[in-house]
Length: 354
Image 1: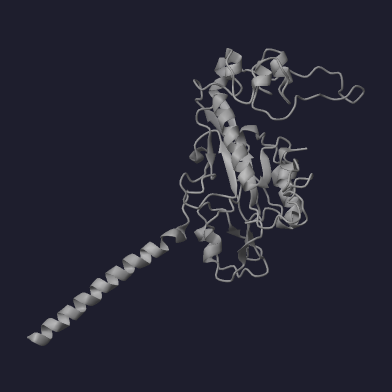
Image 2 (image 1 turned 90 degrees about the vertical axis):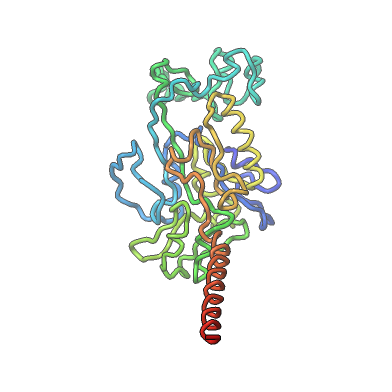
């Protein structure tokens, strides 16, 4: 069972919204510190939503062969190969390793047992950032069972040699942000884009006329028209599954709980605690992205814990809903028109007096 499927008063045991939760805002919290780049989310999204398969190719961005979000890619796992991280403590070298104590890790540090951290505590190894348990390996008798696992330099918090710590992988599963102030919805002339009872933003395919206004309005470049029919498409946060009290397919498929689904207020509180943990673990550039209700889009329904600045992940650092400035623009235009009209009247009045 994943963190997304913990039950509670607003989630079913399967992790979907309980009946009667209409009016509660649901969303995604993507913790990139535990993303392993498996792309299960991409596959699950395509399969469930019937998103057309596309021909992939080398993009020049490491193992990223999807490239970007689009009409035929509602989930996109980004891969970043980052050099020059020497000097930053690697993931997992926490205060516990130095005899101190990191918040939320007191059991491991004191010789107790915390879920998924037993080997770290008992083996004298600093706990990693993983939330999942240690790999139990194959059962006895299974093909390959009983074979000693190969030594892997960096896995589950095992510490790499100093020269290897100059490089790290960053992986992140990107998706539509389901903005509070959704520019795509505000500019849609047909009402094809609407806000659901769960405060998610959905495109009605049969109402979209393919005008493309939403494409240019999105501050993240998420929404796109599909070449086959001209309609605009993006993530629906699996609206059909939510109405059936199921969690979105990508969150269901994520093996490490990097993608978590739930009530947005709970996710924000969980993300704040998680950020504290990651900072304590020696990742000083870790930060939340899209979690601030006072940002340029009013906060996102899908937000992230990043291990570096948004630009590293090819995300805009300060996205703003374009329509936010329309009122101010009309005020300026009105003032200019008023001044021009006053000048014309004054000119005519001067001519009459002469």
